[in-house]
Image (cartoon, helix red, strand yellow):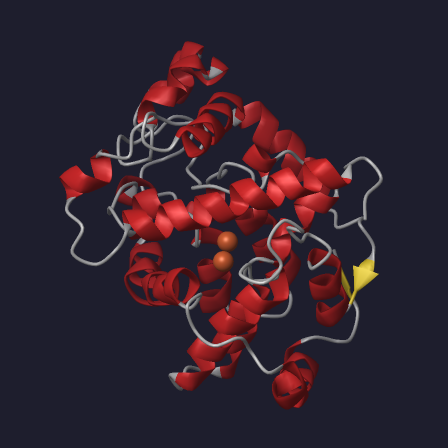
Length: 289
Ligand SMILES: [Fe+2]
Ligand SMILES: [Fe+2]
């Protein structure tokens, strides 16, 4: 584990991450109306609100560019998928070991649910990998730079982003160029040209780029981009391919992430051989992180 994080800080990181997951699944419960969704105000969920306040105030274009420059060269060492998962699993909440899922269990529940529904093998692999980017916590990144909804930076914030009022104190609000509809981007330029707020999604999609198909990379890069995949925002920056991918694979993946948590705990010895084969099919042993 990274020596810059104390056990208390790691526990806090896990706590906010779990609370965020619960918050998101609550927000998107089937049948929940838009007005109920809007009821999630700062008084109802103070910890989550505090988290988003930090996130929305600190995720500037400049911050994102610095994090991309820091992490995209993949200088954090080489690990197999299992090694990365074991490393992520050191992020555990000791306060309630019986009811909380470990990180690996969440990954396996997600990927097992995808597998059970007969989806392609690359999607099972992507489902297992989808939260491995949370190792950013173990590199010492604060929670607001690892989890939470993601959104484009360098252009106007959509009011479909959760707690949009918290952008008021983001320094980018004072840069007029960043506050137009298109900002620093061209109309329908394609999301691959758009800098997303920094977090585990951008990082894992970059790590997986040489190994998984485009559809999988879309699922990974945008799985926390709720403003787009649940509310249809930011189509003005999307190409036709982006729209197509969101309408199919990104949307298809979301329920597996949100609603697989109640399923039975995965039987690791029974399923490990399947995953050994799966990883061998897509990854050349150790990969760069
Ligand atoms: Fe995630
Ligand atoms: Fe997840």
